[in-house]
Image (tube, rainbow, N blue to C red):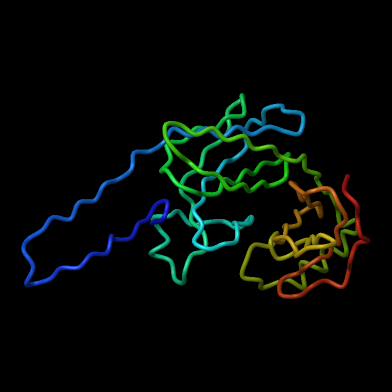
Length: 220
C-alpha cells in the first residue's frame, strides 16, 4: 500500500460466497516535526516545508505539485503528489499530523537552496532535521531602454502578460535551464534561491530565444 491514497480499495465479490464484511483500518496520523537549520545550525524561519508522496523511484524536483486528492482528476499519471505543507516557525520547526510511511520532505525558501530529503514517518512521533545550503541571488538589468522597448514590441500579441513575454533564462553550467524569470517594467530582474556556481544567462521574448546573451556569471 502507498503512504496515502485517494483511490478506492479494490476487493472482489463472489455471488456464490457467503456474506462477508470488508474491514478497512486507517492508520492514525503521527505527530511529525521538521526542523530546518542552516550550515551553522541556526533555525530557518519562514521556509516552506512540504511532505510529498512519490509514485516513482526518482525524487521530486522543484516543480509545482497537485494535492493528493486532485491527482485522480488530472489527466495523465502523476509522478508525485503533495500530501501537506506548512511554514517553519521562528524556532525553525514545522509541525504536521502526517500518515505513517515513507515520503519526501521538500524545503524551499528565498534565502536557501531547495532541499529534498527522503524520510520515514513512524509512531509514536517523528522528528526530522533538514540542513539547507545558503543561496545566492542574481540581480540584473537591461541597461538600454530602447533595447527593452524593442523586445516588448517583438513580444506584442503574446498570450501572457507583457512582463512574462520578456524573460530571463538562467542555466547552470552543468544542468538544465531553470524556469523563465519575468523582466520587470524598468528592465530589472531577480533570480533567487540559486546554489553557488557558474550560470549562463540569456533573454527570451515570447516564442523566441533572444540573440542578446550575457556573459557567464559566477555566484558566490
